[in-house]
Length: 593
Image 1 (cartoon, rainbow, N blue to C red):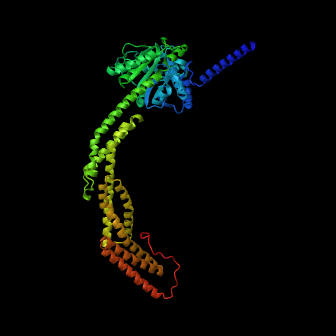
Image 2: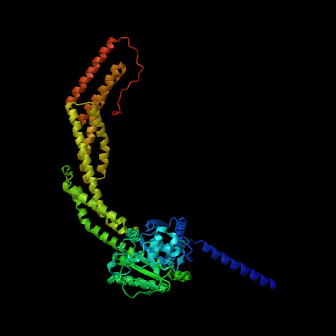
Image 3: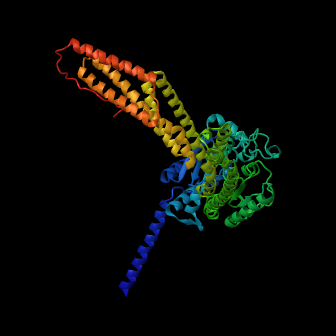
């Protein structure tokens, strides 16, 4: 019995050690420690560690600099096309809101990689659909002054900072930025009527103009660039939620519904009155016309920071706020994109009747070869339809992939008529060029203009025929293809086969002239025989096709051939004892092979 008790105790001991080890291992998996005075330096260090730990999930951006040159950091978490925005520490003494921001980034990233849920929220699913952007510390100068005092600032600034703080070197009540501007009274919504301090101060000075502080400018530019669906601004203290920024109608209803959800989640009370203006949430709601909420964490702490002893309860209350926000932002985005998809589909279908008019030009009116023309009206309509298709395709790229299928299907009709139309236009253009080339070449032979330029023209002509054949094959309709074949390809193929005899005989003449100069008499004799053979074949071909010979060309070739035969006889007579030639004899040419 004693041994049994000892065994039970040992088992429980090892189980306890296992739980302790597991808890410690889990804690070590996190990077951010929110249960301490969280400094700007600590935040920078943790942001770097988070980015390195989750390179596929987290990105970091420097969106500007504070008045004293400190970098302003934005951190994104997630992979979704929709975006929401969370920020903290607009006010210096409210730096625990940075703890909340950073803890969200850390815990959400960890849960994503482990496929865990937080308060029943599926983190991976939510962050796959929505990207959450954080600016954890909007006011790094003010936070640093509140936490560290004058030693963190140049000596030249000390007198001014003390003056703005009522002469005191105790900056724990400091709320403004480093220049004495209250950053959450900087936004241009009822700014002129806010009241407050008349000059730079530790709190409530609105600045000399809206959006004049470096931090405000940077934040506004950044938020405009990411276009979030919802914005959450964390402040302290009082356990309140500000949400009423003079919305009306359906916006009021939707904003109020989410405000109640945030209230149920955090236990914070909804501020009953309307905001007076000046704050970031005022600007986001009233200017951007999107959902904005200001959450005041922790019980009221007076004119100082919330004590660290409150952090654990603050986190329990707010652990899932970012996930709720991301989930709701994703719904808003999806609803809007679905609407855009449906509107685009409707617009595309309405354009089908216009696109179908192209069929008249590429098929309907094409009854004879004389109808194989590109009318100005056809080209103009094609250009309009093509541009419309491009605009609609560009609009589709802005939709999430799941909302592209119906507009893509709807666009099929316009693309079909566009593609058939351009196939007709390309075939006619290239066919007309081929006919023009054929006409030019025929003119050369009719005039007896047979030289190296003629040969080059013929070779290019021959190379062009397969390209035009391919374009004709892409035309729509068997009848249209047959007409194009009759107008372009049949004449071209006939000319190619006919002209090759003249070209081949001309090349033989050039070759024989060179062979005479080299005194390759046997080679000349062989080529004369080949020439006569080609002459017979040419006559037979022309007769079979009902073609007449080109008298000027025939006369020119015959004259040159006779001259070569006469010169051959003359040179052979002058060299009766000529030995057999060792040089290779070329009796054919590439065209006749």
